[in-house]
Image (cartoon, rainbow, N blue to C red; front, side, top):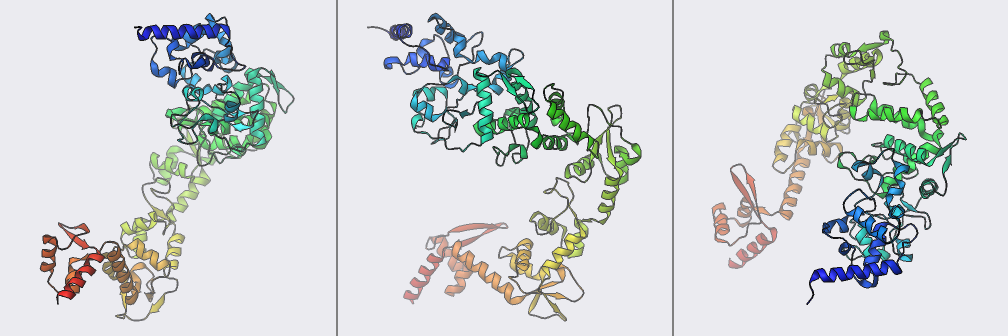
Length: 600
């Protein structure tokens, strides 16, 4: 009788009646939460989708919609609230716009300061009164002060992020109820202090924060400084001293959301607490942060240059007198040049080599020079920009590396000293048995370089416990001969060396010949290894055709006919050159032997 549009219109009218008469927003409630409660009053509907005409269905379910824009869904929500005689600004994040931004925010600003496609919540608050608090959408608000709990943003069952629709519906998409979730993170006193100050300034309960120097900063300056410190800490190691109150385990700090990176509640809490820590108590680790910043920006890697500008903005801030005095003291105690400082220190050229002089003295390319800087063997210093390739190096560092480089051994020299092939030296280095000072897996350098002391120590470890063999004996086999015998059993040079180092194989060394080629292995130990490897292969894979032929005293062709006729099942085929090896399970061979014995 009536179409679907009629029922939607009727439901909208029922909603508006409830809205006008009895439904009012709760203290601190968001516009999405308020309208959702209106839409679902008396179980009329399951979401606020039907309040809006011609709106993308997914938007209402996936976005928070708590920051009103000039057009779109947010504008329509604001108009609905305004028609009810209320001020939509009180229910939206727009009221905090002047607190966080100097100019109208762009898309990235909104992503940085506000949650838009997922939501944080306190499970205890939702149990007591199930509605969405607007402050939960502010990124730096990560703790419920009333219950002293870290806010949740993921379902404790399926670990998926919680949308605002899931929160207001009371359950996750996996079926877990919001009221059944728990937050168990233990919070330090510094985390709670940072959150109390932040949330008090957001709510307007206080208008200023007092610093240790005795000066005060207003709410706008507070959030500007917290943002500067947080940006400064972006990409810092999670184990840095500045994160001691809320460590970031196994990660680097992520604040600026560069390169599509995401950040969770724990990350935001850690960075925000560290930023507050630097702002309120700079004497504890501010200079340590400056030192780390210098290490990140010493060599010419441009992605961190912006941090120098951030540091200068912080130092030049009028109210930060303690930070200024600590920075001045740090500069006075410097024993080397701080790159691109505002007041550039003049470098005495007599104590430094230019980049070109360094390349010529060390006979290296520019790329190799950058490798040495990254590995810490050289320290590059910036000169004024008027100088081409404005890098300088202390003569002591260059001379020290030049002297050290002459003493280092290449892979070819080590291979000759050990009596093995160069490829085996590479494998020993990559396995950590013969540590290289430089190399692809050490610092990204293409060539592997070894210290003579390391090679000598390796030989010493290999030959520890060996006996000196005066003359050749049939009971001993050379390292290479033993490796040939063990190769078919799956052993390589690295594994054989490990067995020697652990003492599983008895070794001897020819007099006056200290190298791997001069090491002999006892024949009995080699045969034992072959037998153990064979037995392990039989237990795990099975017997070969040749072994079955020998055990049954029949020809290999007959065994192959049994396999072709299906009398024996092949458990595995392993390629071997142009053909392949066939293996039969141990149990199948035993059954075959039993049946053959009964026949005879």
